[in-house]
Length: 311
Image 1 (cartoon, rainbow, N blue to C red):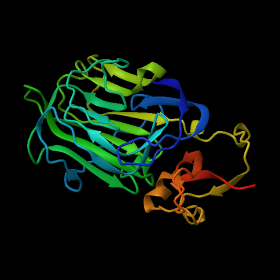
Image 2: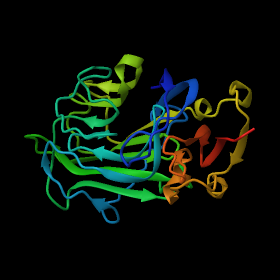
Image 3: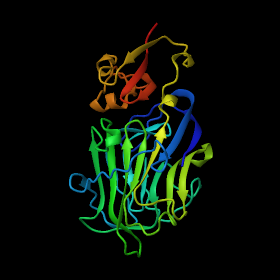
Image 4: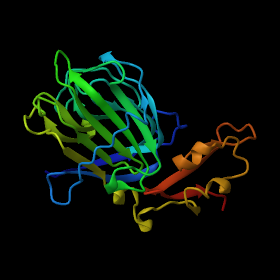
């Protein structure tokens, strides 16, 4: 099945980037068009299970109703904001900015839902102790053959159970550096989606959500793969659409722009070049003087930056 939404996002001034928190970007309003396609569709993703239980990091927590923060290894765009960390939960959620142990699933959209969430298989679940549990692993080149060469983070729920259930099953989410999300479902889940929620929700008030399934038997089946695609064209507006009063210097490239920042910038780190956008404070003690770097494109490892310069 295929669906799409357009979310109008007004994005504010940039904040210092803190893992797990949003970095807001000062840009004009653009449409953020999300689509999904699944493995039942012609041209949909292939189901190819990425097993990381022997190579990834296992989150030490287990049992009922918990979440844990992890680093993603890159800055992940989600509804127009960028996050370097995420919070997988025992109940099949991934959230950004803060974690949640909420176990009662609601359909998308709902004001009862946590915002900033990816519902992979949101249900009241139980995570057994080691070697079962939630694993995660970063790849410079994703091992899924459909996405080879793309940076990704794999989060796997391995042999977990419904609360008071007896069947073990696994599912996983693969987050890509450009904002795409692949969800995959292994065998063993006896409910086939009859009591779970799957989809995305950033904020219901602005229409920033996309539902795949909710409490629908047969919607989530073994061997299913769902690809949520962030339309990269919405992050790469044509040059003529950007109308600024100031003169701008354009700096190209994710790796080489770092050395072109103003020499009076007091704090530069390796993380800056992966974020691609930051507000800097001068070293002259003028704490109110900022150099806004405004992101004009962030697609597939390429970035265009505009830096305010003196006329």
